[in-house]
Image: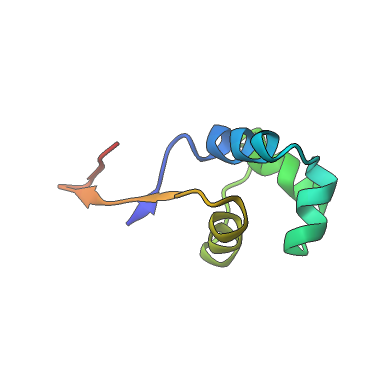
Length: 73
């Protein structure tokens, strides 16, 4: 499994769908709002633990199967 290339937009769209701010999401998953901003603009990739917290809270999938070294969409 590998992190999907569009992880930043998936995170942002899911957060906006819930109608919460970056600050509120950060509070809910015990992370700084600035980190949420970095994830959403793609300047930072989440580690496995953070990715799992985001997947659980936002009910999204950030990892995709790898086939022949390429992530399938």
